[in-house]
Amino acid sequence: MIITSALLIWFQMADAFQIFRLLVASGIETDQAKILKGVYDRGQPLIQLGVVVVTSFSLSIIPMISKARIQRERVKLQRLVSFFMRTGIALGLAITVALVVMMPTLNYTLFADYEGVDVLQVFVAGLFLLTLLVIITSVLQGFNSMKAPAIAAVCGIIIKVMLNGVWLPEHGIIGSAWATNSALLASVLISVVILKQSINFEWPSWQFLIKLSFSVALMAAPLIIINYLPFVTNHRIVGLVVLIIASLIGALLFLFSASYLRVITRQDIVMLPMGRSVIKLIKKMKR
Image 1 (spheres, one colour):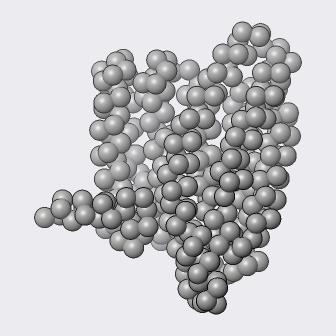
Image 2 (cartoon, one colour):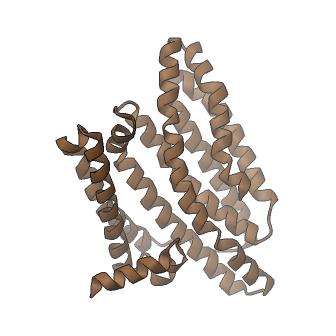
Image 3 (tube, one colour):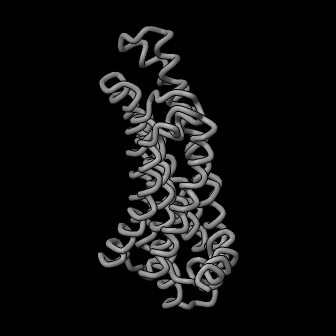
């Protein structure tokens, strides 16, 4: 868990050594290279916020998997792993899409400009892959597999460093964002292959993915709209307030839609951070 959670820190270290040097070597002036590196670094605290939520959820996985494994409950293990994969995909996709679509307003609200919005959107999109990686790593640790997460992380770091060297000179700063996502994807695939050797779990069905996509689109609607409101995009304080309100509306729309379509059941919500409080809120609003 520690290795996977710290993977972004290792990526950040690779970027610290490579981005500025490779940008300058590709012909970009020193001052401009520093500015580009600063814009890219804006994505780190944003994606870390998502990691905190995912890590809080993943902490409940290890003891449940360990208990079922020790008691040799094979069927229960398969159901648990399938459940965690399904919920991890739903949670990761919702958080990632929210960050991507609100990025123009969020970037202006926090940093007073719209520099690097496309780069930051690509960068935070990696949160979905990181979510899956954290979930799979937690499941593997429940199986008492400690080497697998380390292998996946090391492979990810090697791929990140190699792709930085290839894509940064050719594509600029966005190349580093794509390198991060590609490295995360490789780590996820390696982890899935290793997990499949431990247990045969079910992937989410197409019906689940379609319902999830609808719920996420419904959630994203208010976050997309605020990007086109003049009084939001020109005033930082107003933008922050509207952003918070739109985020709360989007979250509620997602929870109601996902609950109605049974993308996320009550049992799923209970396992999320503050899940019981969310269920109580939903019950009150239904009255």
